[in-house]
Image (tube, rainbow over all chains, first blue to last red; front, side, top):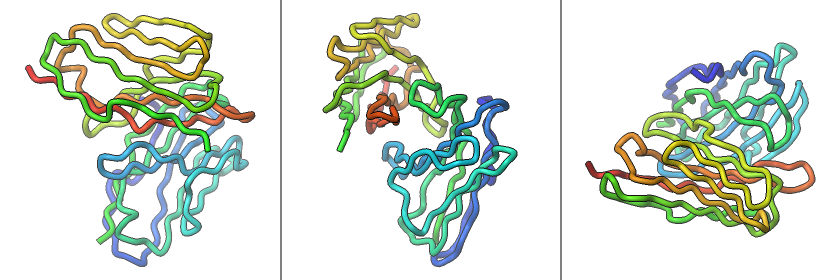
Length: 114
Length: 111
């Protein structure tokens, strides 16, 4: 158990819909990262928040947005969903905002868009 | 842009054989991390290397960071079926030391 909690574990929805994925970081971790992993693909970095502020942006689509709340939990909002958005979405947390911090990954939220 | 290339993409070995995966960066890295993702699981941190030429061992796993801090390798001696999974490297790059991920090496071990 990494200490990072992600909900929901599975989500099935239709094209054009909007979903919200939730992440609670490990106790004491200020950084939250979102990653997308499609079938047989590597980890695509989407976005990072540190103590409530956006710290780094990766290959995140304009249809996607995220935020980190004062209690440090984070939400990833995916809108106008397309078939290609079907993937495993991981949240990870770390103490530091820099690359030298070990990342602790949640178990992921598997999104299926039909 | 900054990239971390990881090879091979796939590797099948017989149990007991050795396995090595390599990461190569186009730029100097501040550090490199290695993660393992079991099938159906999530990435789990294995180790971090920071110093030029650093070598670290974890039982049958040996991790190296190149002298120029542009490449790294993970070597597994005498693979076991429990080693099955995808191994990712991730290097710290840029002024903000953002993590750049390799695409991973998927290891299959035949018993």
